[in-house]
Image (cartoon, rainbow, N blue to C red; front, top):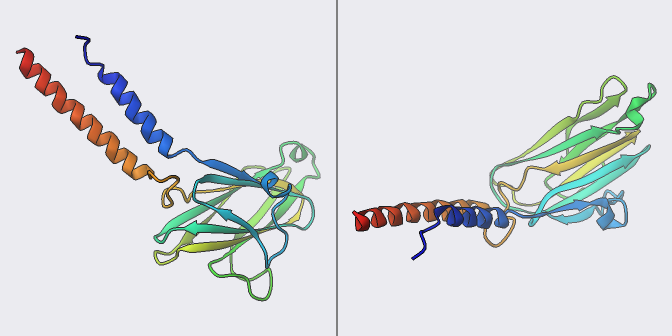
Length: 199
């Protein structure tokens, strides 16, 4: 009889846990090359099954409006990280910026409704990534409306942070870790049983 390979089972359980967390990245190419610039009709994005959203400001008045759908109720934070243009930022004249706004209800009258999460401001001397956090209350669930108002210059952004509260597959990540822990516990019991049997 071949010896029991504990490491193989542990590796399989880790792969199972990791597989449940696999997700996709949403980019502007999925929306014809650019997210919606219409404040009353943002790009619909389901956060279930996604790990991040990537976009860019490509010049003056490049506005991106997003509707993040499927957020579960419960306190959660969404992070928006802006990165300076790696090529243009080498020029002394480089400048890029705009503002980040969000709303927990649909825009009614204008693009400037909601709450300002921060102002993006890049220059030749200021190229470090800039992060903004949207903190959502315990009782919020459903659709979040985000307005990214690129007023000038080129920069890119990534939105993430909601996966800890939104399942990415029918087998959510927390359950996978419970499964992993149960598997390791079962291996420990099996090992004790085998040790007693051989003694």
